Length: 304
Length: 217
Image (tube, rainbow over all chains, first blue to last red; front, top):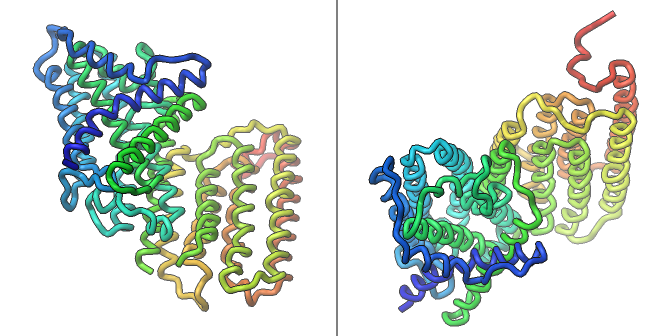
């Protein structure tokens, strides 16, 4: 029952976040903007269409979208949503598997992009890999900090009952929230790292890799991207707003928290400009240094 | 139970020193320093509340630090930047990304070192010594890795904030006179450096200290 509710939440909610972000951006620009449910309509439309495959592509191109979505869905099974919704699958070390499932999803997308033989997509692939290589230390250091603070290597223990931990390690956790928020923005190719609205510019990262996908494949990729935003957002949200309640109330609380996260992302996207390409690594290194600082502070407290 | 306000002030000063390291604008670096001085100035008040009453000593220290370091010194620095009409970019010897990563390494080193240090008495917070060490090291790094005289002065000031935090270790036994003397010295030093920057600029049309070691006649 609870597992079904958990699965239902992470299957149905992700496209809504994207809709909320777009609505917030539209409100900032003084427009009405598309419906909050727009991505659901887009996905439904794409799923009914056929896919077009270029003759230069091989099986790697066809495998890419499905493999990356599968990896992301597996990762979603490892993440607890708090309260009465523990992760359906949980064991010591599932945080590492989670991080590498995100990596595997990225690898499949990159492989499919390289398979098209287009130099444009190759450029996007190389950027995606470079930036994620820089974001990964920040992600792992944040995971390490949480693991040391909670004495556990499983998301279920690391993301539950945060209140006492905030008392002990408050400033360190605040830095972790900051670092993980930056990682979430970078991993999902959002402003300040990349503008998801640009489709034909030389500076884009994620969008350029999926130019040749169409039909159901594109639907898988769009849905996978929104799921990834949902997963990383859920981690940030559970850390920043560690509220718990019993089951019906907690679902409402969780959805409200995710909407707050989407609104914050929308505000960031409306008020910041995209960074110059060569400034991106610096911000990611800063996120890593933040996470490292949190590790140092938590280590001192745990040792004492 | 840890003191959340004190933790916040100490970590804020640490993060701001990293911000000084990562920024490419002289004006922003001076602003970050001034914010850091404000965070550091709060520490004597927060430390004292732990042991019960707020002493006059802590208040005088707080007031003098705020007047001199949060307002006085940044004003002097901004003035000398304006008078010397220097370009407002920092121009480091090593890139910003690299210096941030190195700064993170130095912070880790300071945290490790602070654990090993034998202390005469227990510090007010377990973060006090590591943060003081980190500010010292980051300040030193700013001095050696930047070419503009103004940014080197900011590095020196960040270092002085670290020394100030070290001094708080002895807040109960150290007489005011020493700390106020240090603050006055600092003020005079920055004042003199402001004049020196102006004169270097007059003589060479720039304040790049690296070209001072090539002698000419």
